[in-house]
Structures are given as structure tokens and as C-alpha cells.
Image (tube, rainbow, N blue to C red; front, side):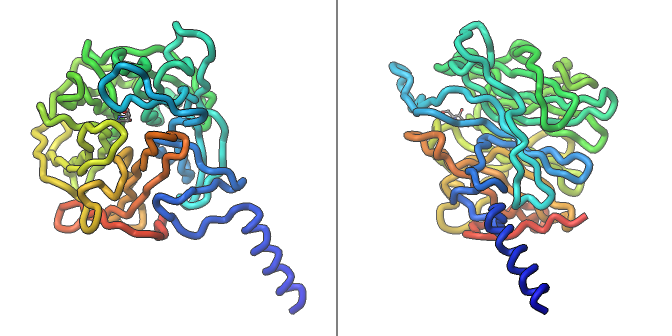
Length: 336
Ligand code: DGJ
């Protein structure tokens, strides 16, 4: 009996030491299993062989306002991309810097003086490579390109290849969507953020095909997060108000390359008009229940960007409509 009590005490103690998380608490500091705040913003998740990998922007250092921009162009040095792993979406192990930024090289796309945002990773079964796409920009956001990097393992290191304007188009906020047939589509805010574009990647996921479609035309949407439900495709986006929150909205299509119809705000209740003080970045399906997803968002602190918080909330499908309600704390049931 004494041994049992001691063992339970030890397990509980190790849980505290190891920073065991029992709930997701949106907007609070979320610590990894070593007790350090998770530094992964504009994040995405890739599941590989039963493990979730979280990739996000590393935001460190002082926030400053780029002068003479006429908008809230707050910045921190581009810190590269972090990677964390988890089996339960609650307890995250820091895997290190997946893509390192360079320093003192203004010619490099991934220099600390540039912008590296919204990294997303997909696994290519045919090539065995992990492919990361991200928004690459200059400090005034006029470069407007997409960068690509590749790795042999999910936690990196990723080797940066180059950046492009997909099919010649400006590209800022972005995400990747991998369909059940393995095809990957790159969604990005284009045309000075007035219109979203979506482009099919080549089979190796390293470049763009000419299959390209303009969606949400002149609707000024950014921060796309795409998911599939009952054979339909959904994209959640935000408006374009810099780092400040605004109402999200979702659009639906019968096929990725089909017609996308905007159907309004998926958020419900107090602060729904501010997306619960967050901006979308990813939507992850939960395996236990085909109606359940996790909405991943960022609560930006524009005056101190490194203190931006993670806002993950349950997204439930009801009669084909996504609904996001505020939850101060909750547990995602990952299932098998
Ligand atoms: C909104 C975007 O969604 C963010 O990723 C970031 O680029 C900010 N704008 C910059 O103001």
C-alpha cells in the first residue's frame, strides 16, 4: 500500500515537474513539457505515424513599428520555425528549430530582418520528404512571396530552397490543404490581399502547377484555414485588420476547384465578432468524432508580439455548418 501511495505521489510529482497539461486554456500561457512557453505562432499541425507535429513562427525579441507604413506594421525579428510533437494535443515536446533563420544576410529570404509567417508542413508519400511552405516577406510586406523548404524527417532540420510568387501572383497569408487523394492545394491572400488564390502544387509539392483559381474575390480575406467535411471543403478566414481581431467567416465548396460560397461567421456568443480575440491559422480534424475539429488561432499582442497567445477551440459541425464557441478550458479527445 505504501509503495502504491508513494508511486502515485511520484507520478503526480513528475507530472508537475514535467509540466503536465490537463486542459487547453485558450489565451493563457501554454507551456511545453519542459515548462517553457510554446513559441509557435501562425501555426499548423501535421500528423505523422500517430504523432502530431506543431510548426509555428518563433517570435522573440523586441517588437518595433516599421516607420512610415500608414498601418500597424509591428514586427519582431523573424525567428525561423519551431517544431513541437505530441500524442494528445495537450502535452507538447519541443523538437527544436525546424527551420533556422539566417543572421546579417539581407540577401537571404529567411534572414532575421525579413518576415517568416504561417509555416505549414505536409508529408509527401511518394518522395518521402516533408515539405514546408511559408509566407516570406520584407519588413514592409512588399515582397509578398511564398517560400519552400524540405526535410527528411518531421522535426527537421528543413533546408530552405527558395521563394516564388505563385504563377506570378503576390502571396501573403497562406495555408496548405492536403486532400484525401494526396493532392496539395496552396491557399494564399493575393492581389494586395483583396482576393484569395488557390493553386494545386506539383506532385512533389515543391512548386505550383498552372491550376490556379481566384476565390473570395475582392472580399479582402486572410489567415486561411481549410478542412474537409462530408465531401465538402471549408475555408475559415479573417478580415484584413493587421494584428487586430475582426469577425471570421467561412466559405464552402463542393470541390476544391469549384465555386466557394461565403456563409458568414462560424463563431457564436460573446466576442464572436472578434473571433474571441484571435485570428485563424489552422483547423485540425479530430479522429474520435467526424463532427469535431480543433480551431487553431492566434491572439496577437501587437505591442509585444512574442507575448501573443494561442487560442485553440473546439469546432463542431452542426447540419453542415461549423460552430466555434468559447471555452475557457477543454480537452480534445483525439481517439484512434
Ligand atoms: C495579419 C496576418 O494574418 C499576420 O500573419 C500578419 O501578417 C499580420 N497581418 C501583420 O500585420
